Image: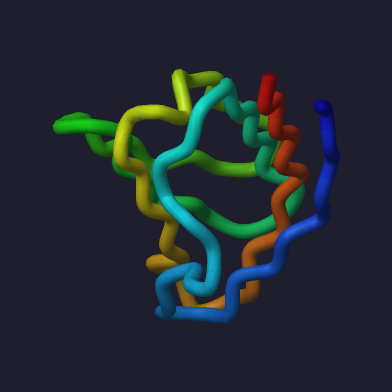
Length: 79
């Protein structure tokens, strides 16, 4: 199954309400704002136009460290 979602994270908050490790793969593209993302033991700061692809079986966490809203295109593949 493949699904695409538009995700908004409010300023200075973590994204909550979803399971942060699941079978499959995940692709995240930053449309607006900044995204702090931790996958396993690695943390990255992404800005508009940047993306990340990872094995979503690894624990991952998303947050917005900035003073403006962050908008993301999140694509999930779950076999």
